Length: 251
Image (cartoon, rainbow, N blue to C red):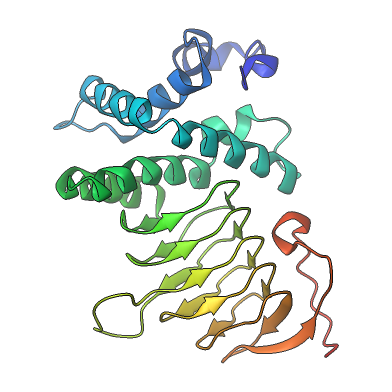
């Protein structure tokens, strides 16, 4: 089990938390269900009903659990502030919000829009991140800090992407249809990045903090500024994994 190595940690004040979300669960899938339900439940939609809903969804789509495990490992590998997998599992807003989104996305695609939007709304209320349930997000994705992250309905995010706080993958107005960004695998979106419109950010691109992307960014390049411009091409580098946010201005 993914959490077994750290589930025996001794912290009396957190004994109840660990018992409910880790020690009494027989699998990572069960832990994930209990965590999501316990965090998202409210006075009108109790935990027990959400446990049943999440269990049904994860049973129908086991890939959600596989993606969650990949997200969790990516979080630890890319953030030195996490001493083990238990910390992001229990306490990281980005990890929790992304997993609830995965469930909401499947429900949205199955025609259950109302409950999908309920989950989106609860994540927004609780975690200050807002991902439309229509958005498609790959696995091994790390959303660091998560506050202020907004991802629109027709956005597509590839595998092994890293997203920092206050990133927006949005539209450019009131247009309809496919109107949100497409983010390739391995991309790093630094703090405050805005990618607007149906534009492609190619695989392994790096977008500097505060940049506003309005046109496509080629794969393997670094872009910065308002509006963003390409300042460098790189070879054999995956920015989302290195998390290197230094930007030298070499063309």
